[in-house]
Picture: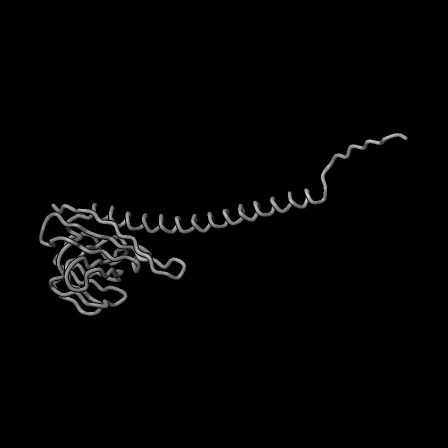
Length: 187
């Protein structure tokens, strides 16, 4: 009688099934990793957008001439009488930011400007109208002005002021804010 020695090579069904199971677990983990990475990338992009917007306002504040800051003389819900200012026609492309005093932090679009009386018409109406103790800055208008708050944290009478710009946003239903602070020396 002859002994038949057969060598079997190849993989069994159990080995193939185990390999498929291992690959599917690894694939699911990689898919989860990529989807989480895309969510974090989107959140980081929103944070960068907020940072860039706040930084853009800060840089403009650093470059603002003395003619674009001052004290409110009088006001009502939609108009503000500014200190007598020489300068450009502020009726188009500008916004008014109350930086100190009553109404501080509000930013409104300038709708019209009367250079003779230094009266500014703003929109929307003030939540808290400014008074004679309120200081202001006139800046170039931004489409995201309603998401800004600009406040002077120091002495408004000093030539060196600490100004904070806060940008507010809604991220996935929850409010977020980003604040940047700078010092401005007025000459």
